[in-house]
Length: 157
Image (cartoon, rainbow, N blue to C red; front, side, top):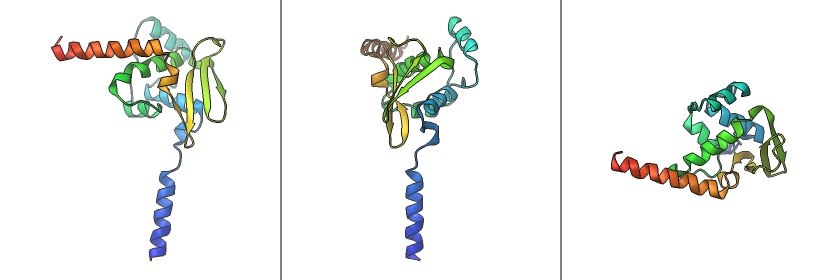
């Protein structure tokens, strides 16, 4: 009986350690981000129209969106996730993936000088790294905006 329980426990533990297939490749991770926003099947032309009209993209699953990021820790980083999503979705049909064994840079085709969205592989899963995907000056700006918005909310404005 103990042997059966030990085997069962071993199977359960190994099953828990399996990488999530949604993050098995950089492309699947980016697709998972698009699914979290409900735009995976939306054509780029429609995405461009929405961006031009300054329409908001609503999250379908906040939890699924956060799972695509390796280093999301605090609510202050919400703007960073939006920045990365915007960079990727704006040219979703023409993204290029330049990958090594543990790191992948994603850019729209032809934008070799633009800072990439960076994914890193950890434990068999590819996740977007905010710290490497959002330029430092943009990070500072977005964090300052978040803090100002928090301050206004606390004051009741």
